[in-house]
Every structure is written in C-alpha cells, then in structure tokens.
Image (cartoon, rainbow, N blue to C red; front, side, top):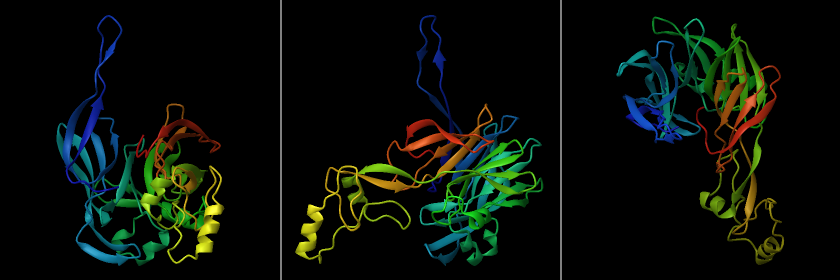
Amino acid sequence: MKTRDGLALASAVAAIALLGTPAAAQGPTVEVLAEGLNAPRGLLVAPDGSIWVAEAGAAGETCMETPRGEACYGPSGAVARIADGSIARVYEGLTSAGAGPEVGGVSDIALADDGSLYLLMNLGDDPAARAGMPPEFATAGWLLKAAENGTTEPIADIAAFETANNPEPTLVDSNPYSLAAADGGFVIADAGGNDLLMVDESGAVSLIATFPPFEAMFPAEMLAAMGPPPEGEGGPPAEPSESSAPEEAEATESAAPAEGEAPAEGEAPAAGEMVPLPVEWVPTSVVVGPDGAYYVGQLTGGPFPIGGASVLRVDPATGETSTYATGFTNIIDI
C-alpha cells in the first residue's frame, strides 16, 4: 500500500428520499471526519461511536540495506481515535518501515469483548528476514495487545507460524493484514501466507483455511506491456532473444499453443490470445458475519486480473470455503 500524506478518512452515506411514490435514490454524500492521517489502514467503530484508525506511519530517517533495496524506518506508526471532529493518537511510537513508495507497520486493529485493543503488525517478507533487522522490528508479523499506559504486549507470532507450517506451500512469506475479533479469540488473514488463522485466548495459532493460487486469463498484449514478473509471481513467458537461430524462431512459430493453452517456456504468446497464468489468492480482509461465518476479501496477486477477485465465506467449524460474491478487482477491505 502506498503512503499518501493528508489522506482523508471519509464516510459515505446513501440517502433515500421517500416521496410517497416509488423511492428515488439520491447519490451518496461524503463527509470528511479527519485529515492528516499517516497511511491509514484498518479502522473500527468503538461502542461509544468513536472511530479508531491504524496508521502504518511514514517510515523514518534510519535506513538500512535489505535484499529488496534500501528501507528506512522510524517510530511514526500510531493508532488514532477520532471523535467530535478531533484526532487523538492514543498509541504512538509504533515501528513504521518504507522502501520507496511502500510503507508497512500496524495494518489492522480490533477490540475484544472486554474493551482491550489489539494491533496487527505486518511484515511482507520471509520471516527469516527478521533475524537481520534492528530490534525495532521485533514485533513485525506479531499480534499485539495495547496496554492503557501506551505500551504493547506481544500475544502471538503470526509470521513464525508461517515458517513452521507454510500451510499454502508456495513461498515462505507472511504478511498479517486483517484482524477480526471472534468467539474464542481473533481471526487473521495473512496476505503473504495465503491463509486464514485463529489466535486463541492463550496466544496459540492454528490454521482455519488456505487459499491456493488460481488460474486467470490475460490478454497477451497486456502481459507483454508489463514485462517480466517479479520472482514468484505469474507473468508473460520470456520473449525469444535476438540471438536465437532462424530455425529456432521457425519452430516457435509452428508450435503456437492452442487457444487457452499457456505457451511453452521461452515462447511469446501471439497478439489477441488469452493466456492462462497462475495467480496468488492474497487475502487482505476478514470480518465475522451475522451468521458467525468468516468472510474473506481477495486482493489477488500480480498481474491482477480485472474482475478476478472474490469474497469467500469460510465455515468456522470446518474451514470449508464457498464463494459468496465475485467479479471484483483488488479488494482491500470489507
């Protein structure tokens, strides 16, 4: 998610005018509740009507080299409480890290039945990378409990569960992203691990469901324009090199794949073709429905098929999944 200074938190309210004859729907209205938030992520409405927002922060001025390039970090993450038009940061000093336009930190928050606030810290990497990070990153990939004095208590290492189990065995990667209070503990959507986890009241982590990669169709022209994919993601087959021998090029042309069939490695799909590619599921949001089931929103991985994202219903007792709604693109919250 990209940092946007001055992002406004807004609420959209659909107003319906009852005119005595069939109801005429007016357009939604937008009211600005707060401005100046630092990379707002998850939010909740407290029982008293106040709005609490997780602010991932704006990284910081301390920088280090990582396998993905230079990353900078600092204690700019926070949790803000918005009430009566004012913002009060009730928890500050949370670690925020950024590399280029990307920023990470606290990704979501939830209130337990006893009023305790819980924070979910994202990671977005192989959990083994934490070993080389400064002590400030000790809580990356963790579920934390916020204390009244502004400190936090570690509850469960979500990223360590990915390392030990890797339930959806693609890459070892953990990015705890969405948090929901549920009977018996908390439900967490791990966007890196592609799974749904339960943290019980003792802090033990268990698997509810996994979300394996799926196949999506992409126009060849779109894939060619995107260039080669990042390692581990779907993308277009490599273009033949200019140094290829003429007979190799002829063989490539004569062995064009059938419609709906992926080209062989090293071949470029012809213009106008639809190319099937595997895409990561990437769960980014979870809520508990009125029926007690878990509803999970899908971002999808690159190259992000248009209309390829869905909301799944997950049975909390069995972990069985079913499609609740589909046809979306890049769901980030529900």
